[in-house]
Amino acid sequence: MKTMYFKSLFLLLLLVCAVKLNAQELTVTGKVTDAETGEPLIGVSVSLKGKTAATCTNIDGKYSILAAKGGILEFNYIGYEKKEIVVKQSRHDVSLVVSAQILEETVIVGFGAQKKIAVTGAITTVDVSELKAPSNNYQFAGRAGMIREMDNESYGHSNENRFKPAKDEPLSTFSIDVDAASYSNMRRFVNQGQIPPKDAIRTEELINYFSYNYSKPTGKDPVKITTEAGECPWNKNHRLVRIGIKAKEIAEENLPASNLVFLIDVSGSMCGPTRLDLVKSSLKLLVNNLREKDKVAIVVYAGAAGEVLPSTSGNDKQKIREALEGLSAGGSTAGGAGIQLAYKIAKQNLIKGGNNRVILCTDGDFNVGVSNKEQLESLIETERKSGVFLTVLGYGMGNYKDDKMQILAQKGNGNHAYIDNIQEANKILVQEFGGTIYTVAKDVKLQIEFNPAKVLSYRLIGYETRLLNKEDFNDDTKDAGEMGAGHTVTAFYEIVPVGVKGDYPGNVDKLKYQDEPANKNTQSTGSNELLTVKLRYKEPEGDKSSKIEQVLADTGSDKVSSDFKFASAVAMFGQLLVDSDFKGNASYEKIISLAKEGLNNDEQGYRREFMRLVEAVKGMSK
Image (tube, rainbow, N blue to C red):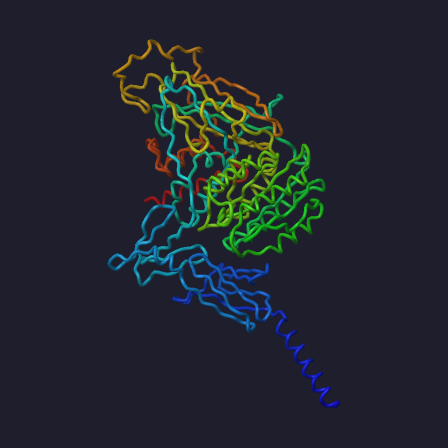
């Protein structure tokens, strides 16, 4: 009897041990490769099904993750079929197969294959035998050894501003823009050896990447206007007008308390060193500058949204850093739910009179829930009424959704930057902390009235996505751009002066069926007045706008500041990149020569870096 009892007890113990052993976690390692080529795949999302644990493969395609025997590992990678495996041992090597959808987009032509590249609209022809699957940067290798990015990036398209006749359309109205995302994104393309696609270039953002020495506001207004005119460097018969705005500066120690919510995309598309890893490093730089009176909460979103860190004092830096360090990428992208939760938490911790802001870090790839343009606009327009502002930081390459990022920033009382490296993160979140984080004027609009006695026609360079109707200028319900502490904004107008002979931009034939009223819009109200600049702004928590004005009288001189020369060189570069219809006799040589005359205000070296980028594009354009 005793023997039977002990046997039963022994078997029970064995069973318990087996269950415990089966449930015991072990470190699973392995290598993920392309099923056809055997090459390692970098940045593959590896996650434990039904759990939050996730990681991604390194440069050798290797991964390591804690998992229980019997658990299911999911392998996700853009361009490949999803794969699941049951954990049976401590090592599992996995091969992924290229998605059938990707293969369907490849059209066989003779001895080659043509693959559409969405961002450029170009066709890349490669040898069928050399067609290979995308790496972590989503690239295809061509026959001559060329590497071309397989772009899954998306950019909004807008038509270039044209010349307008001053006598028929004397008013030009637009919202200011302090964003500079287009510049750092352009730099990323150039540093990869590529000329950026035209739609990725917003000339005003290239110009506004740099700060300029404008006069500071001294009165009650938080902004001040500066104007300057000179010869247009790409068309000597035209004039170029620069309009500059400077926001008041606030010492960092005097900035109001901040209530920040870090909203971080941890979906599978954010896996990798230029995505989530760079997000963590970027935000740690910001955390280093937080004060005791500042607060930070962290919200993440992938398949769903959740709060990782409740609102925490800026003094508890280690706790915030640890929360950031614990983040990993995996799953789909429920961006809309994340935005709603972040605003909810920001409103719960609202600091009256303080800086209340959501800082969104993403590649913009919203593919679950609220995702299309109209839905995003509606969501953000609703949330901005809360008094919580928005900063959008873009990351990643190959999957970057610039068009969605722009919508979020423009509709959410916010600004937009693209972080291509840790130096750019330092510029945005440390050196320009006040301008990026603290708003001193919102809904800032400009309206320029041109004197038709001096101006035949004019065109605004850039700002195509920020144009307003003339009646919007006095309408306080119309949203416009925001300016942060110390920010500068620059806008250029190319002007055809009265007296230019022959055909000129904006000219139209004489009307056949009606007479033009005699002396219509031809009398000047000021001797040398070229134009009048009108600006409207609201206080950060205000609903009623204030207006300031400034007149520019052009003497015809070409004695301009070094800042004018440098900024006009950047404007010329933007026009070459988009192949502007009005680039005139612009050239890379002229850009470099003109930029050299504006290097005296370059403590951080950004202007010299610009010249190196122009040299690189010049070499690629030959």
